Length: 191
Ligand SMILES: [Zn+2]
Image (tube, rainbow, N blue to C red; front, side):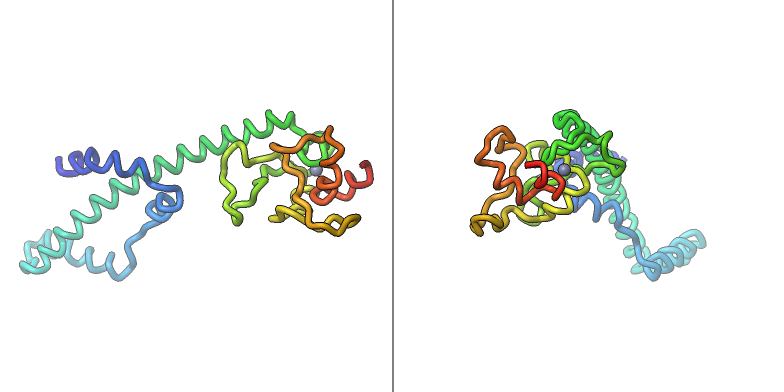
């Protein structure tokens, strides 16, 4: 009954758990020493030999583990939903890119290595896992771009923003120089 009550109370707050917190919660385990202690209390409880202070500690442990168990169930649910969302997002990015590298236009079927879903603005620069910030990239373009947002144009030696698949258009000649910096050498040869 108490567990059902806690489940209801925690439902709303647990829904706002971030993925990082959800992962940490799901991975939470009681240490070996604590487990041994609990086992000792459990045995003594069954034999009716618990002292008053041990009983208080044992009951506090049971209450805390009930709460943690409820939170862990919520966290695992959030994580499984996020995996489903990730799969849908990946599918969307592939479909939107027509299964071509968004930097060099290479088709997936022309390349033995699977294409990457990459962050246009890398996570380390604050890039989000949103469809707007994700792009399909072949292995070569992905490795070449790395976590860079800009690079030195070899011709002008000016710092130039890299090609951005959501903002830039391949048909615009002015973008090609910028694109050269972010694409694979094979494309640079084609330009
Ligand atoms: Zn490419």
